[in-house]
Image 1: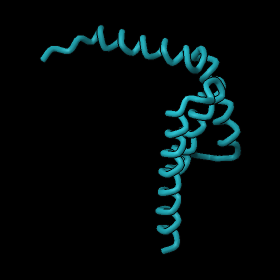
Image 2: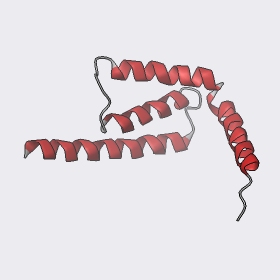
Image 3: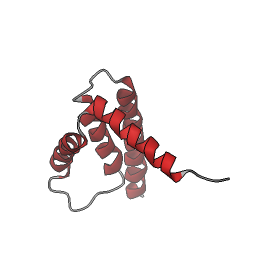
Image 4: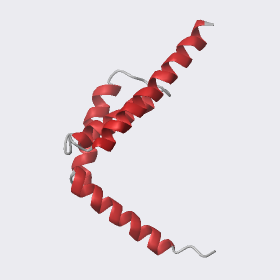
Length: 97
């Protein structure tokens, strides 16, 4: 099976353009995300597993700043919250032993 890499790259370009319509110009969106990350990471020496889903929630929050009624982002936040809770419980139980 041959893969049309040019078509795949073109498809990604269309997705980026579509996301820009929803969330704003990529640089502005990434700036919003970086500001949220910087607040969350203040005082942390390294990122741990439990931090990753929280950071992903912040990505979704930055997107919701532009499109507060985008229900998929709300669903993603719920999902990442569950993942974060599961990791916290698992790590907390592991440390208690």
